[in-house]
Image (cartoon, rainbow, N blue to C red; front, side, top):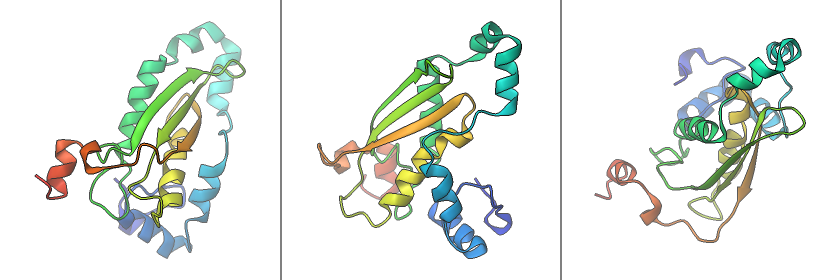
Length: 170
């Protein structure tokens, strides 16, 4: 959780309050959007050095595809729908997460298939940008592709019991 009273330019907002504080301090979410819209993040100097020194040792540190999926899920649980008090994972917006190792860079790439509560969601770009930005927060993850689908449509049955409780539906 970001301290909204001390938000920094390189912080990535994950809640409506954080996004509001960021926009108030920096005049909009342009920086977040620019970072999130990049197809891949540049490989860090540390990762380049580790690969150059000993690729086998570097690859041994690389998480498995399943471990990367778990890491991505944890990141998704930090992203809250700006209009609802529930994270997008527990809200049931995530349909599928696939991760694999890039043949070119040996880093991980992921594809997230997700939906929104409504096709006319006013915060759709913000939510998708926050999901894409996971690549900038997760070590060994080079890129996140987001496929936005509306079939099957989202319904309250997709929510976890915790999310339903938070929304007053239980």
